[in-house]
Amino acid sequence: MTQRGKIADILGEEAEEIVYLYSACDRDYFWPQFTSTCNPEFKNRFTGQLYFLKNWQLEEFCELTVANELEITDGSPKFIDMYGKNLYAVFEGMGRYLSGEAILSAWVIWGN
Image (tube, rainbow, N blue to C red; front, side, top):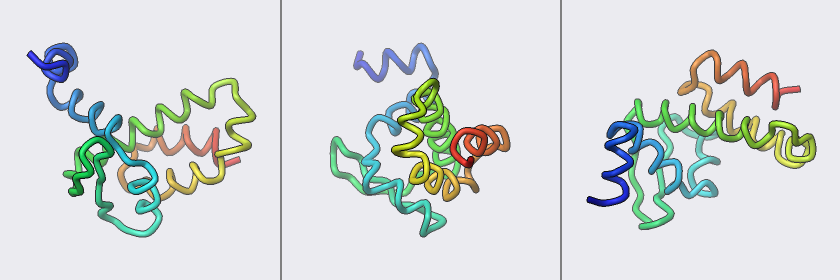
């Protein structure tokens, strides 16, 4: 059994798929598209493959992205000062895919 298979047994297949997408994401390629298009093209940084995610994948990917970045900022005003404006712009672009809770959380931390 592969590592991904073992993780899918624990998390479930859909959750494992999102975790993999998150780790495989070429952020320099993918993230900027959220400010300019409704359907960003995903680039897998491991394989170089380009493709479009399904809507549910985009929603889950964006939720995980906001959650992870908020976790990084916890107790790090320096991180917020350095990256806050750029990340908030990405989060605004992701807005159509985010839950109300994620938008509010991002605004509280990054929007000030």
